[in-house]
Figure 1 (cartoon, protein in one colour):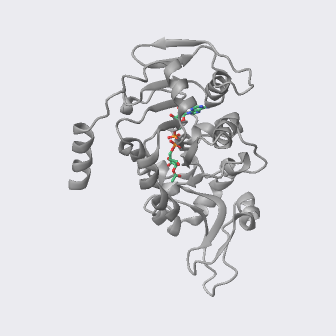
Figure 2: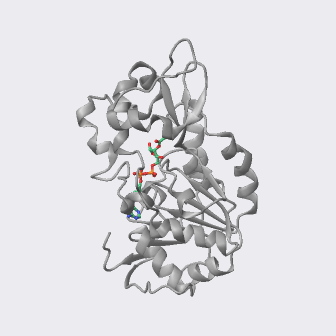
Figure 3: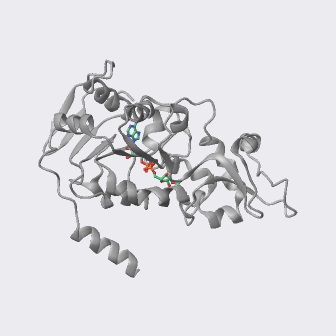
Length: 297
Ligand code: OAD
């Protein structure tokens, strides 16, 4: 309780001031053009066009949990609940398991940032491995992924592909190595679990080095990833690319580009001169919001 109050007070006392030199779309593009250590924070919104729903939108994963009779939709990713009811997760897992899915334009945009030597790191909350498929290697999968799976009893780790059949048949995979025949859990970070060491190994140094932040396709409601944005030094430009304005981060970003991540990043690629026909029409809302006019997702 005390810790929670402390975070709220700190947020209130230290709300970010927008930077005077990044006020417009053109200035945001210039910042991206000049920056060499861009920290990209991504969320489920960038995989929606690949066919994977996000979590909190009207048609998102949490709106589809009715059939599982959970007290709270997020229980599906709660470790204690999983230990007691692994079959519930495996009834559902096929809906988010990435099979025969290709990366979006936005994933490729982040890969292009890396190819251009501009990407400091992509902190993704997504578990679909599409960053890897797009060729992004400067990557932290903050919430793990389906790439690996682990026995909850003996800790034995296996490639995620070895539990694909169980995910598809909605059955609980069991460990073939331990005497307890433990339940296997994908190496996805559930609520109440620690983020992987690669997050903690990189985040502080990255925060001190970054020269531009792009937050793409995330509601930025889940800590500690959401806290990255608050811990970035005040003089570092921050740009939001998202389908919606984030009310809880009102006036936090220097510029907001509101629209589908694919179309916005296509337009950015065009403006950066990356041989893409991505010009879009935008509506401007004071003080810093640009919204796509034709937002086909
Ligand atoms: P959310 O569902 O909370 O937020 C997705 C955001 O992307 C929303 O603000 C949408 O408006 C936006 N969005 C949807 N489609 C988009 C599109 N085509 N282009 C651009 N933006 C789009 O998902 P996350 O922020 O990723 O954790 O959620 C964070 C974490 O909450 C997840 O990693 C997951 C969940 O609980 C775990 O599973 C541990």
